[in-house]
Length: 180
Image (tube, rainbow, N blue to C red; front, top):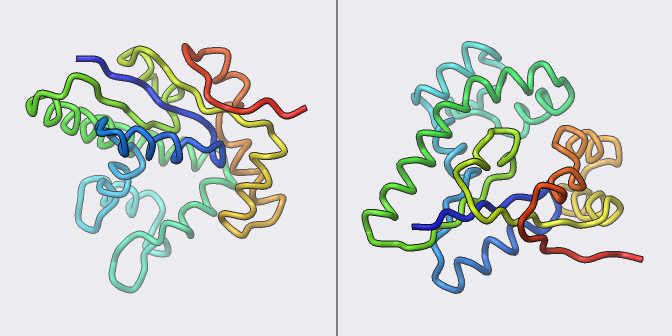
């Protein structure tokens, strides 16, 4: 079995590439979907996050208000690191179980779509590593349009991640466009 790592920055086009794999029958384990599952009301991840960040991050139905939590962690690197530390074990085991299920079904190639592939040190489990790269201006423009955010908010989200050029340097395969 081959596990392919797919990563990129926010607004880089990684989801488009991920959807192309899916459209061609290649199974994709999406870390963002796993992360949503580990934050569902009543789960271990939910309990840890509510204990750390308080009831203010909850919607009236008890689910985590993801945009509100995002605003908190993207504006404060210490809180972002805390959130990552709290959820990393749950996300890693969730990804592991998804891969195991696909392997048991007989899948020969599985793509791991993980925005923080290098940061979470999951790159050691994947070969090749595909990085979806885009120039910084395009990344900023796409993110602002997608999330309807200000320049400052979009830049703080981009700056919260490893720079795309650093990811590109670690890639086995680069998908993207050079803008001149």
